Length: 250
Image (cartoon, rainbow, N blue to C red):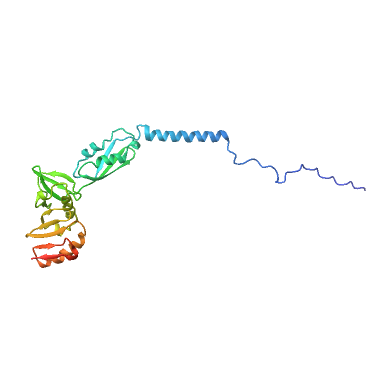
């Protein structure tokens, strides 16, 4: 029986060298991309409006902390923060600067507490020296700034022994107040008055008619260490203006 030749397979169309064509991937749909771009812009515009222009995030409260010498109402008055102002638009640096103009305030920090509160934190000056003035006493801090006026001398706060020698605001008064701030409590408790003819000539007058020529405000720790040793001599006058040559005089 005669065999027929095997049928040859049908010829396939030639394929490109890289294999069959693949569908394109990663191509952004222009309409879809435009939609998301517009959506993002709308979200950002809404957020900006909520923060800067709407009534949702505005100042409703001004909180004051750290104050004892000045009242919260005084701080709010000089801060001049308008209720209803957008919280984000409050100039915190300018507000802090205005608060620091109060004599009793050494520094101020202003921050936002979302959604509706401005917080003003003050650090007040600490009076060190009382100077008789206007029928009472000006209380002065270590920088020579008059913190406030008091009708009576505060307990434990020394007076200048010679007020004309230390007029308010001069270098002597600043040095005297700074020295008092640096003193340890044990020595400060013994002080009855202080005098200062200049910034480098502060003298402490202690109980028991004891005088300490302290000098300037520098080297406070070294001076106190020398004075503790010299106190053992039970002298009436101590000169520790130069702690390297401290002496006691009977």
